[in-house]
Length: 174
Image: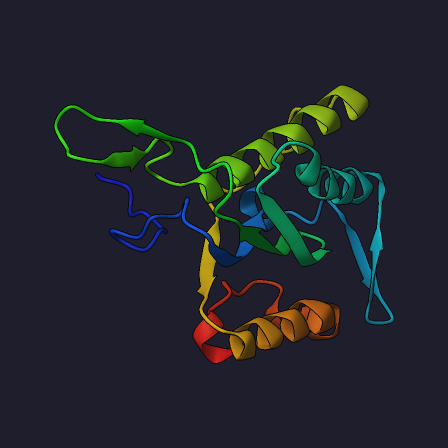
């Protein structure tokens, strides 16, 4: 059986833009802490995830990070990809440059984040059970109004934890 891809068909995820991502833990296990009095309380795993998210900026010079939150079993974040330093190569079959990342820089960033968190948790706690759900959810942010709505959603996400903890995020309803 062929796996359904989460990315938008024929969209270049390495082009400049703003993206909202949701990255879930395997089986949505609450590894990163708890919501107490509507505030996210990070545990040691959650601190590792938060630090790894902030560390993304040290590995890519053509991105920006915006609002993010580590929730008990997932991470929400806004990532900006900028035009500078876009890596291209000439392809003899085409007449112009094609993107070297093809499937998208966004996927590369998320993959690196997941690998860093997994490695640190497994090394620090010898927890071979920790893991991530395959892939991630994304939403292409198309305008300032959409960006503001998503920022608000991320900021207030702990308040909605009891209602949404087992739901997949559908940004059309935000």
